[in-house]
Image 1: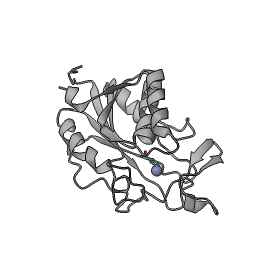
Image 2: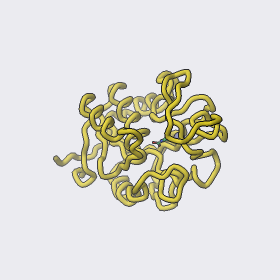
Image 3: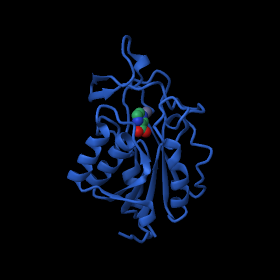
Length: 210
Ligand code: VGL
Ligand code: ZN
């Protein structure tokens, strides 16, 4: 299914940061493999937005902030269940930096998220309380960008929630399968596929975009 990229299309590149790649603190298996795919793809888009996971030290989503808790356990917080993670993407650290080989000089906007100590943020649109906006929705609407192609890390967390919120906000959304990798905590990749199917979030291959 070939699709032509147009002027109201935007590529949203999610969290291609050192900590989500092999050697990083919350490494996604094969996370580094998406970089050349995304670089090549980005050249075909006029509009590119990057997201950057950007936590203060001691963030509530870190297992280390809760005595007796281990990474990948789930706890209850004010806004619902929260998976606990290893410390990652701490503001200003090397782990929080974009991959050195990510090469998208024309990216127009970087949305940072997860910078409030008590709220995690997977989606590029809303924090995990589902009400605190990041501003991306307003930016896209003001710029007349209606169709989102989403790529990056991790498929089953930040890519998933970004794509779903985009759909709920009335944007057209496709997830670029070969430009994403998942963490897979407790069946989260399968849950993501199911949810995409029920919300009609389409999947495409980077090679299908012209
Ligand atoms: C992410 C877990 C914690 C992601 C961010 O980018 O998918 N996952 N923080
Ligand atoms: Zn995070």
